[in-house]
Image (tube, rainbow, N blue to C red):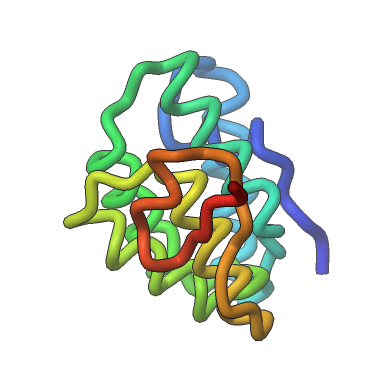
Length: 132
């Protein structure tokens, strides 16, 4: 199995580079035909959120919807898939920062009670605890 870098998913989701986007389409189509999977690390999802928000100015709800669609692709195998699914589900209705929400759900799946933070906004969430 091979893993995907963030830029591959950016090309797939934005289509901003025609040549690279076409290569990704062919890569995904071949994986579908061959019934193989590619691995998506949770760090790639975190970076993908950052890139889509900052460089492309895509609203959080749209990013959550797009990530939800990626989860439907059988050619992709996600690290911490359960927490990614929970994150996507909650992100569609939450006003929380997407990166914080992903960190929280991944931490909880790994057995943590809370995420300690200095971020006052994040600490309003049930998943975080403010360090005083």
